Length: 358
Image (cartoon, rainbow, N blue to C red; front, top):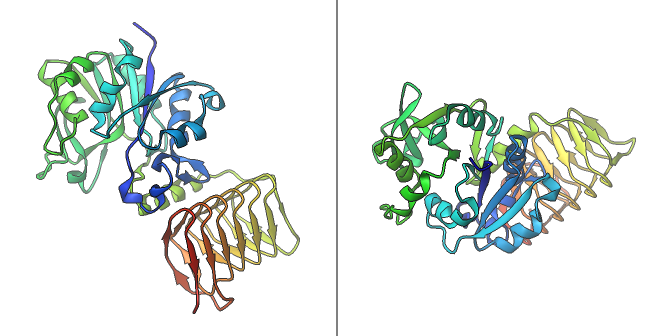
């Protein structure tokens, strides 16, 4: 059997994350100062899957620039262009020339799994089913593809059912043999006008093929909405290891788990971790509260902020209110008057500008 390959889906428009995704691929948005998709890549590489196809769409150039040829992750990338986002099964069909007859693991590039896909891949290799899927119990199964499981085997799947038949949602990771390809090639579009991977897996079941189910160990986040991205940032920062490569002056107080990147400078400020401050960021006369990520080359002066993500080269200064639960895009600017802090919340796209006047 050919060596196992991997497929990462990094297309799609990310409409639920606008305005941030007007100017950035959703899979490249940062969680704890690393692109979301980087976590998927590293999980696959840790399983020995180093021949990775990346399915891209309209943001292909940005994804290629950010990820390169894969050498920074100790793997090799093949970029596969999907003309239109017509569903997960369509993405697999588009990737068939790359996949050939090899078994493969498919991972959605905007999903995060605390423990990665190691258990899923190991079960697939050991048990040799035609497919293996990862499931999680959710309170809102109507928003996902769901599976009915009997004695560890999947017997039925439905995509976003109006009347959910199961509380178990498909998480964004799957393993397949090449038996999936003829099933996908025979699919018709669903009521959503997409080629559904749930329909393809159901086709395997209908043809008497075995589909294994595993359940998520730890947390899983689909980072499709602003609140999800903030929650993912918090979950990853919960496990942050302190690392101080930059500098904090004697007037500053740094407590808890804090990552201070190369060239980052903290002056007369309070940093209360877990906090990630990226390379060359500058923090002065400010309070950076827990669960906050500050991107590279960002500048914060006379600011209070917590539970937020500030992206690269953003500038925030002289605010009279505390920022909380916010996403602030690359090169965004927020300026105001120096007053007693209170709280406001924003989701601010790249290169936006806000001038606060109390």
